[in-house]
Length: 154
Image (cartoon, rainbow, N blue to C red; front, side, top):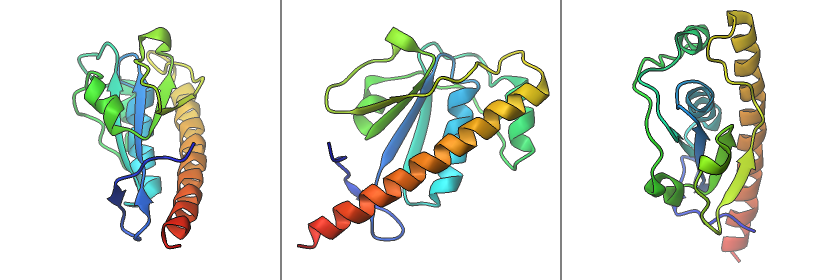
């Protein structure tokens, strides 16, 4: 099913909106949003949220993301139905049945370990796994937008 995209990105291609959801918005989804935004380079938008948001981002996540130039010292956000409505693609990470389902949205589930309380080396592996998945998602969205924008010109 083609994505319904409303905004034009930096390069005149249709902009996709990705929502990254995990339980607490204190680890995986925060890393995903940051890494996606960097990889997308203004071509797509991202948000993150948690079904039961924590009080703060996990310190080990803040540390490994600082190593690659991100400040994740903000406050985790709770998931709203408006977030899901906003998104073209919803990437879930460990929230199971707590993630709301809206027909017509594309859902992708990433099976990733929760980085909370893990040793820094393990959190780096989670970060790097997310980075690779994000790169693949951005490439897929870029290709989909090029095809869709070509169709729009006919």
